[in-house]
Length: 132
Image: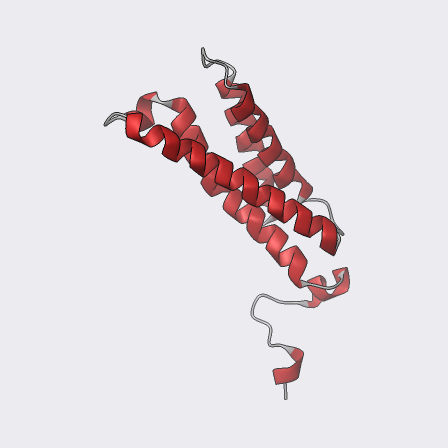
């Protein structure tokens, strides 16, 4: 998951750099790509607490919804081959779906009370109260 979030961060930085070449220069969109990249990078920091994880999860959700709203606002004006010629719409759609694993990581951080509990929990673990 850490490698995926690092790749998402690099991809969002790349999208921001690609949007610098768009003639309209959508600075808000470039800034939101930067925010998404920063949120993905923060998941790589070990030991993020409960409250910071909650605040960052809300920020990741807002960022994801911004990308979806931007795409669906552009959707009625897109032509039949929009994915080949319309970089802002394609970038927002990719960024919106890329924020899902980042949000999932923050959700996992909120489920554990401490670092030891997160390390001890396996993927297919059985809760303590159900073990024999």
